[in-house]
Length: 368
Image 1 (cartoon, helix red, strand yellow):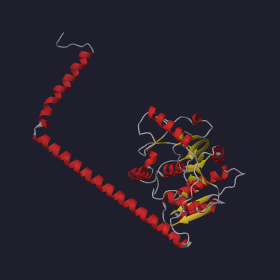
Image 2 (cartoon, rainbow, N blue to C red; image 1 turned 90 degrees about the vertical axis):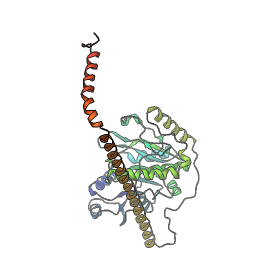
Image 3 (cartoon, one colour; image 1 turned 30 degrees about the vertical axis):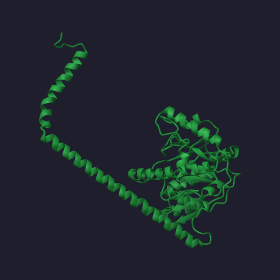
Image 4 (cartoon, rainbow, N blue to C red; image 1 turned 180 degrees about the vertical axis):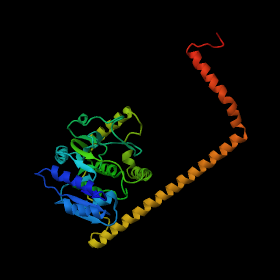
């Protein structure tokens, strides 16, 4: 499944790579969700892509809502999430399927995500007790060869390329659409997989190039990330208690990765009843259900933007208060004559510094 909104050339590149690298002996559905997309995306698909099933919504459902819409069209036992700014490499899908086939304790498998120059961008990630996430390395990422060929447990893998068992997707009720419009969706899905007694693994032989970057302003992205992190902390409070407390440094990372391995080893698969992917009653006609889904998405969008406006107002007020405090401090300094005193003291301080440096180098001083 690929969810797309803009940049037709990026989407075409992604789907062309999928068609080129798809294993010949494996049945494959390609589902593209046009999520309130620019008209040029549909035109590009019709002109350049063959065999993709296209689902469109006029209202942005966010990444989770778009993926859920696509999943309702899928028939396979495995679902694959793929971002539209990726380019899959040879053997990418076979390695993910092998990881799940050879590791029955795994419920989802993610690719080794590479930058466009081939350097490692993501190899799974560490999830800390406070919901903060970090790469599994303390400084610069190692080379791709460092991760070997065997799948290994991680706290979560990026949704840029993630294969999950359909039974677990259904048990989780799909992706959490309240994590709107993006951020922490892959963390939430990994915790849902783990709650069903399955692990998430990174399959290092599955490699995908990822353009990376965001179209939203950085301030808005930071707000969304923090907002959704707070939701994760509440939703998965009990599970997060098993994670290591957040701490920087290689030693803390090693402790966190040991906990990941221990948790994966202790998991036992559950057989849970699936929750419906749609909150609307099954008897509701398709047209009415679509309208309900779009209405909920619009309300989420309004809620997020209203919350962001409140945050911006609070930041603006804090800035005004800080500015007022600074102005009062300047007034107090000026009233006390500190500027005049500083003008007299500064030449003396400079001279004292020069004399100190001369004495340290063995220069002439008054004590000789």
